[in-house]
Length: 189
Image (cartoon, rainbow, N blue to C red; front, top):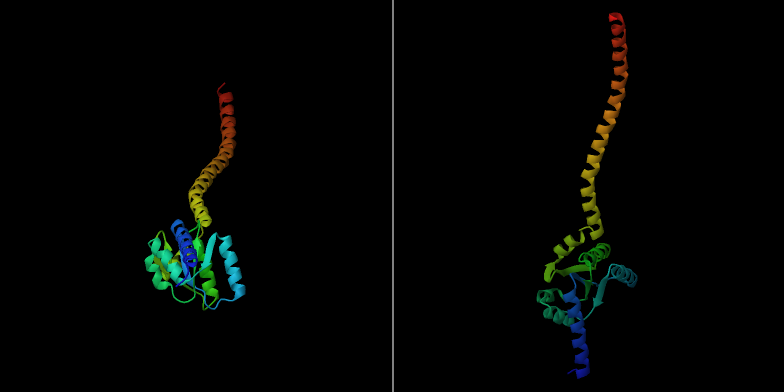
């Protein structure tokens, strides 16, 4: 039987992981078997830059943390060499980075994930990864809002430009009418 100090350390680890899971919008569980040290280092760097915490932990400890926060369904995916990536701010970031590496490395596999306190399957995680980033979505929204305004401005400018083209033609015709009227007035006098 383990000593009390080891049990306390494990309880602290489980409590810390449970707190991270509870406070995050989303996360992904992967089977990291077969990844090289070089690829793992690059992946961890990409995850850090995206604001994602990547943890390799015993499956039993991860399972206990999942139980504590109501993600007990996640335990069915915790077998073999698993790791969990926890998004701190962006719900899409863990899925995006890990999908990129799952496509490059044949043995590296996304198993499942969670989103807003619910366990989701591999297909849902991959769909989540295909969503554009928040910045891209905001840019598309602003572009779609600005586009009709620009089109309206161009239409108004075209009307103004067409009006300016018609005005010189009217000015050229007006003096001819005045000149014709002047000889007729002289003839009457």
